[in-house]
Length: 439
Image (cartoon, rainbow, N blue to C red):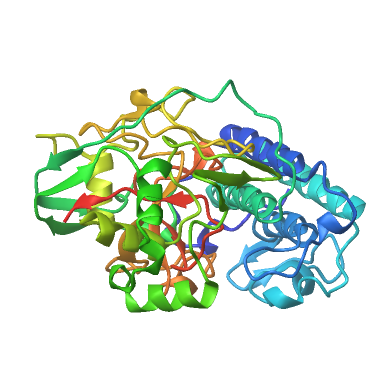
């Protein structure tokens, strides 16, 4: 069995063991297949929209990516042939323009499923035969993370296109209530980003660098539906003074008058979740608001969005302790008592739920439930060097906003306090909300 040349890739982060990666790849594939299991006919292509991919293309792209890095990679810019004809011309997202993905001769669904299975079988065989090949393990971890991210994106697509809600994969949704208040966090020097020499991280998390933080106060919880509805009912979408110039331009061009899936019947707000319209849950975290809407709410409430450094300090530090935690609660891996993660049914928890996942400062749900917009543009950290998957971060610096914390549809295996997500500030399909700081 040929191994990937260790010398061909420099300074790769430490990857998990081959045994762990085999389990993670299997779990990611199980979820991919679940999210695609009920799609038939026109659902496999869907309408031509800028914010979604055709599911038929995206599912095959997952297999292509795994094959490209785990089976075909030989050295930088040197790759073996694919198992399928014209693979790169069909499924390389860097080469295939988004608008053309509905028009190219995609594999039929049964062939896509065979491609998925063949690639995964060969990757697991390679991991079993060469478990100490650290470069292979790195690319296997990258492929697992990539498939988990697309699993989350598939849930966005199902919501956007009003596809059916899948059955709950865990127990009943937790009860809860409002969770108001702020916590004061001391300022000082803070090491923002991933510390070198640790576990697998992505290139935009590297590396930890010192920033000076002024003392600040951050909300104990994310903004809830009930809190956001006060802004809507007070005419927030009609008040120009509450919006930045770009946000007002977006609001006018889109005719936005409330969050995208909200409708009103009399005095009651309703919200569409997948294919069902239900009464708005007042204590659930608000979701499907873009950066402009979050920023406007902050102006209305006399608040502001946290910077990335403030968010990470609130999640990763403890009073009188200079050491950073991997998760808000410590080093233990996420579980169902600490965070609302890895769901497929669209259930957003009340902002008071999951007390076991509190940070040392008392901030709740800094991992899971909804992604949280920050004030910052997504930019490289000082000394940034891209990893082999050059399209992951570098093309998006400067015009995307940074989000933190994950959402109910995020895989637990992806998350850590240093994880950075990024979207254009006008995106409302993302499972994103926000928490705020005192102005």
